[in-house]
Length: 248
Image 1 (cartoon, helix red, strand yellow):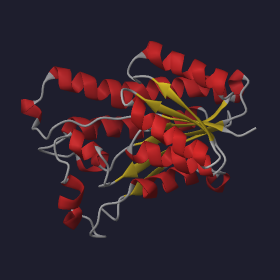
Image 2 (cartoon, helix red, strand yellow; image 1 turned 180 degrees about the horizontal axis):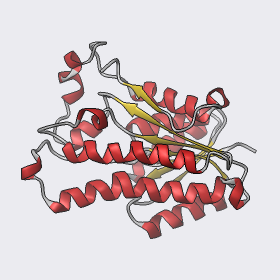
Image 3 (cartoon, helix red, strand yellow; image 1 turned 135 degrees about the vertical axis):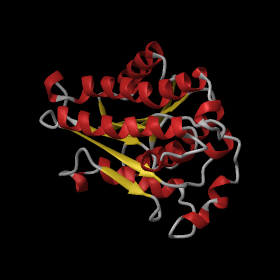
Image 4 (tube, one colour; image 1 turned 90 degrees about the vertical axis):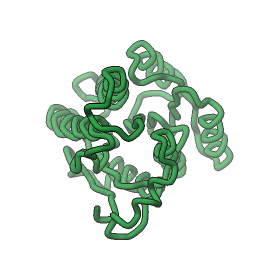
C-alpha cells in the first residue's frame, strides 16, 4: 500500500507542486483546499492521469471542526497517514504595523500558526508509535521572512513564520523517540500566486535583484526540498529548518 501524505493548501503554488511530486514518487496524496475546488480537482486529475492516487479534502485549517473532518476523510479514503506537509498560509497587503488591524492579525495567526498546530496534532495522533502508529514525517512551510522581519511590509507574516520555526524545533524534540521526524523548509522569494493575494503580483520578479542568485525560485524547487525531508535520505534530520532562498 502506498504511504499516505496530506498536503494543506495544495490547490496552487508550492502545495500543488508538492502534491504532484509526491504522487510521482509513490505517495497517495490528499490535496487540501479551502475555497478553490476547481484548482484542487485539477491537481488530482493530473495525478490520476499520471497513474497516481489522490483525493481532494476541503477544510479551512484555522477551523478545528473542519480539520478533524478532513483527517477523518483521509483515514477513510486513503488509510493511515504517513506524512503531513503544513503548507496552507496567507499574506496580506504590504503595511506598517501601526496601520494593521486586529482582524488582520487574528486571520494571519489563525491560519499560519493555529492551522499548523491543529494539523500537526492530528498527524501526531495517527503517526506516533505512542498512539499505535508506524511513524512518519511532518514538513512545515516557513519563510525566510522569519529571519528578516519584513519591516514595512509583512511583519505579522514574518512573526507567524517565526512561530512555525520554533514549533518545528519543539515538536521535533517532543516526538523524536516516537518515529516522527519534524522539519521545515524556509523558502525565499518564490514565483507563486501568493504575491498576487497580497496585491503585488510582480513582487517575485521585481525583488529578484535582492537575491544573490538574481532570480526568484520556483514552486518545484521548494517541492523537491520538501520531498527530501520526507524521504529516508534525510533519516537523521529532525528539528531542521532548510533555507531554500537562492542565498538570500
